[in-house]
Image (tube, rainbow, N blue to C red; front, side, top):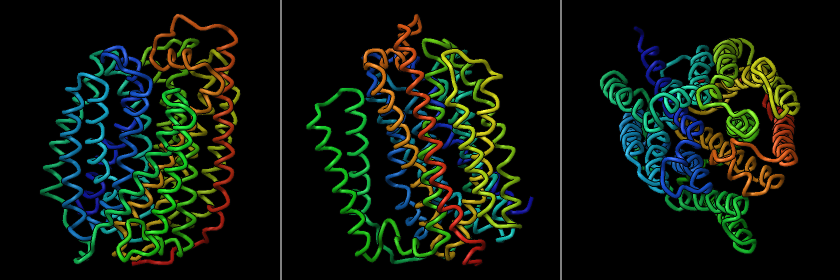
Amino acid sequence: MEYKWTVLSNTTLGTLMASLDSNIVLISLPTIARSLPDTTILDLLWILMGYTLVTAAVLVNFGRLSDMFGRVRLYTIGFAVFTAGSALCSLSQIGPELIAFRLVQGVGAAFLFSNSGAIITDAFPEKERGEALGINQVAIVAGSVSGLVLGGLLTYTIGWRSIFYVNIPIGIIATIWAHHNLKELAVIKRGQKIDIVGNVSFAGGIGLILTGITFYATASAGLKTVIAMIVGGIIIFLSFIAFELRTDHPMFDLKLFRIRLFAAGNFAIFLNALARGAVTFVLVFYLQGPTMKLNPFAAGLFLVPTSISLSFFGPISGWFSDKYGARLISTIGLIVSAIGFLFLTRLGPITTFNSLLLPLVLVGSGMGIFASPNRASIMNSCPSPERGIASGMSSTLVNVGSIFSMGMAFYVMSLAVPMTSLAGIFLGTSRSGISGPLIQSFIGSIHSLFFISAVILAIAIAPSVLRGKKSLVSQ
């Protein structure tokens, strides 16, 4: 096997595992809530969002560490940490314990996400990077959707702890494989410093804003406290930007945003993540909620069309982007997904698999068409020594977009449905049914969310079109 295919297969397995785990827990949340003592709806939200938040917070600095100490070395460490975190999650006895161990998993995932794109870019020539990154990107998004099916099957047949057991043997094998077979091709940049202030202010700002949103949506804090959290988070985040512009070794190298391809691709990828990050989050609770009443496995099967269509179009669009550029193809992907979301605004209290098929195929196809050309455009625009931090920055924006998408979804739903009823839906205690008006409010909130997603994707078309036609950096 050529070395580049060894790289692609191992990194794809790594990103598949890390992205799969971001959603494999989602389908199991009602079961987890019933199994772990005194679990609250706020615990459930942070079991999901804590993983993504810690990944987003450390991702870019891990990209810089990889530029300093070797991408392959830190990628391999990531596999080991992720595997250990999975084992700890399977032993959790209470909600806060599971949140803490999910943070360990998130650290491992950050190592994997921040290095996989850069390692692939180092191993493949430019004319093949779109296809290679397309396959890797498909693993990221398909993993997050496939996790729903696998998580549903394991939870329904064995129990929720099994969703973490499955990572342990795969993680051990992949860690050994990466250690023995991957080679360091990057130029190591010695003497750099880690941006501790930037990392803390970035995580603190995003974390405070998100905490304020979720506290308000779940009625866990008063309005004054929530406003103080959100305002404080915004101030800290603005301080982060000001500091990054002055420091010699920034966490976010804002100079890269002077490259039009890099800036446009990252704005588009953030908006795409903001639009799509909550789609599975919402559909899982709709399918297992008081109107559909599906079991976890059946609910996961309903979402298979998204995964299949995404996996089919991802590599194809990557191949086309290698020949014709990313601008047109990525833009088509955004349009297709937006149409799919508009179809989802017609969802009723009860639906069938066939009724969901076309909207989910459109959403998944659009994701696949957009992801790989956009990713290749971003990576090809950067000088080789900066690819580690560039990959981390891009992945961070995806994670931040996904986090806020979930926060936005729960907030919009909480505006339409009283917290007691919404908590019953999320904790799996309302399957016996809720009143007709509340059902209409619940479905109406879902319609609002999907319409907002379509609008966000329409906005993302602008940076996608304005990116230009060709990469600026080929080496």
